[in-house]
Amino acid sequence: MKLILTDYIILSIGISVLISFIYFSIISYKEKEKNASAKLAIIGIAIFLLLFSLAIYNFKFKEIISLTIITILPISLIILLFPFRKKHNIKRIIPKKQIDERDIMFSRYNLKEDTEEYNNYYLENPELKDFDDYLRKKPGLLSDKSSLYNKHIFNATKASFSVSQHLKSIVKGKAKQKKEINKEETTKFIKAWVKHLGAVSVGITELKNYHLYSHHGRELHGKKVINKDKYAIAFTVEMDKDLIDSSPNAPTILESAKKYVDAAVIAVQLAEYIRNLGYNASAHIDESYEVVCPLVARDAGLGEIGRMGLLMTPELGPRVRIAVVTTELELITDSIKYEPSVINFCTICKKCADSCPSNAISFNKQENIDGVIRWQINQEKCFEFWTQTGTDCGRCISVCPYSHPNNLMHNVVRSGIKNSTLFSLLALKMDDYFYGRKPKSKVSEKFGV
Ligand code: SF4
Ligand code: SF4
Image 1 (cartoon, rainbow, N blue to C red):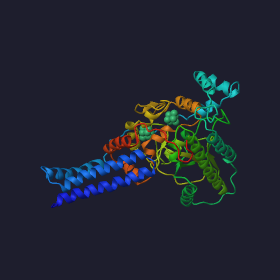
Image 2 (tube, rainbow, N blue to C red):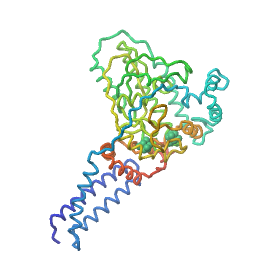
Image 3 (spheres, protein in one colour):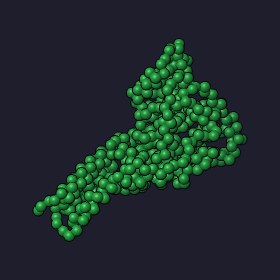
Image 4 (cartoon, rainbow, N blue to C red):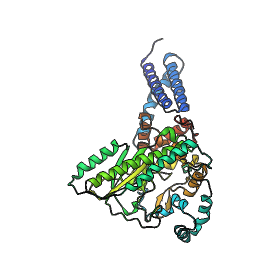
């Protein structure tokens, strides 16, 4: 057996493919994606064996086949990785009007019959009354009558949410004596400290009117939101993949609550630190928001808003929770990073819409909603599912291809999606093949549910 140059090249390609696929297979195994891991190992070994046979056996057309592979492979790679993107003329979402917190499902659901708030709200919105009354008869979030009730997990979740309740009393406070500050130095410190406290990403934007709710919908129901701060600091914390993958089962809401608390703990410390410097600051945490967090986070350069209406971060997709601190303290803002590849990918992907158990996510292209081109989920359908199961579902977050862990393998795919429309199509097909078009919920390792 005498090998020639083309045989050596084919062998090297085979060995590289084998090493890469085995590496990806090990990563997938560690991510508990056993199906993907097995498929990757089988494909890697199969390609290697084919190329190995091609290199060592002599048969008719061997040279032509070898040369074709050697030529086509780099050309395909260049085509796939070449930075070519279909132009996207969708403009940045700038809401024409403020969102009224009274209109979000949590606020509507919490209205108590025969109270002033209840009567006033349904006088103005009579078309919502029947559905909301029907919803209030459902078991409700964390209810022991709900279909996915789990005694330990639901009560632990309530315990976590009670921490957020306590933190609400310190979201605002009196600023101490003013200290001279240097904008650059303070901005740098804040970003480093917030990350040190556990945030994955942090950004700063000027606070715009459309970031603010027009009216409070929870405790101060009906009161106008008044916030004169000039800047908003938004940050994200990661939600655990293992627990989110159990969605819509109980561990997902356990993780949601934990991350609301984690984000809130960071936010109240940050607000207090700014007040210690002598400047007004307010933390916006679970159940105590004056701002629409995803909009603020997007304008602070932390991501885009995708098909499911959530912030899609470059590192973890929608698998994050957000909190915001608004302040009068002068800071350096981040530039808005418009990332059309996310919108392009969401346009073709639709995996969240396919997997949503309540059909709340649109399959359509972005639409003009109140003068803004975007996607909007059907919050009624989504919340109805929550009030039945008792959890906050999260299936859409779990199945999103951007939610994969932040590691080399997935980052290569993310950067390919960012660069090339062709790669995006391939990435979607690969995601469907390796993880399933409608991935099933997994049993959480930590809690066995
Ligand atoms: S699942 Fe797909 S369509 Fe849905 S938000 Fe994620 S990338 Fe977009
Ligand atoms: S949380 Fe669940 S029900 Fe709501 S939109 Fe996502 S997948 Fe659908």
